[in-house]
Length: 302
Image 1 (cartoon, one colour):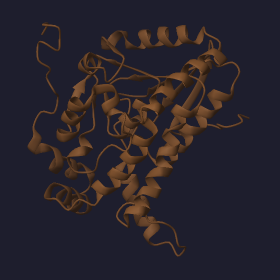
Image 2 (cartoon, helix red, strand yellow; image 1 turned 60 degrees about the horizontal axis):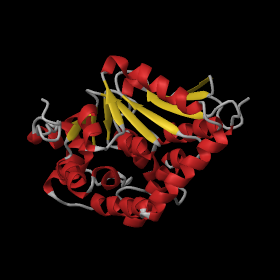
Image 3 (cartoon, one colour; image 1 turned 45 degrees about the vertical axis):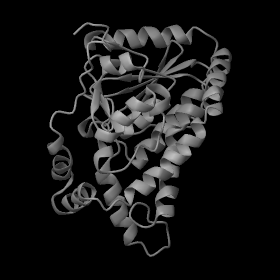
Image 4 (cartoon, helix red, strand yellow; image 1 turned 180 degrees about the vertical axis):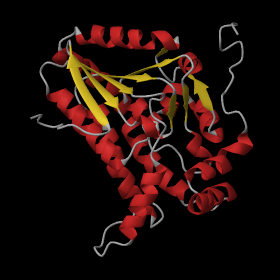
């Protein structure tokens, strides 16, 4: 029996040629993250980190998308269940700012496993990588994507601000604001042009490119890879990344207290008509959401 990971309905783990492949496996829900799924993801990552036959880890999603974000329905369902509990527990979102922060800190501890383990993690993005999917991806050591992948955080339009604040480290302040102010998305190709991810490839070659990259990384001894990962991560810490993660989460809790019309409309529509209707109410006014870079950013090639 595995020491950390004993299997899961939503996370799979396989090992071959010194590479552990961890797959988000909830394709019917576009791999939207639930609390139980994040707990299983942490267990699978710890298992891969503990195994001596693994040097590197590939993180991917099953089905048409990498990860569509946090499962909002799961959060609302948990809130409803907890509201009826006789025991005294924190109630999370919608109760108090401190309860909200406490609950999100527990979620972020699970996703931060990617950063804290010793072995490098390569995220392979295809299809949608949105909201909580980006929180997870930006914690990985290397991110690559298919050219037509959709990468963004549309929840910034009505639901909060990213609790994982790695955006400005990769994009710089102006592009980070451009993304967060509008909730618009980048293609995988344009995300690579701007430096949000390391690189992108034609969709039909992404699997082969990811496999070649992670296997090449796995040729290096695990203890050397750990040293390389730690020193680069320490440079991010010295630039305030850990502090920004904590402050980003607290700012997200502040944003949840918004009483603006769009935020209020999302909550009311969610309660009255469900998630799909709420997402339409949030996003329809914005129209097409894909950012189109100017020719100068594309090197003059359209």
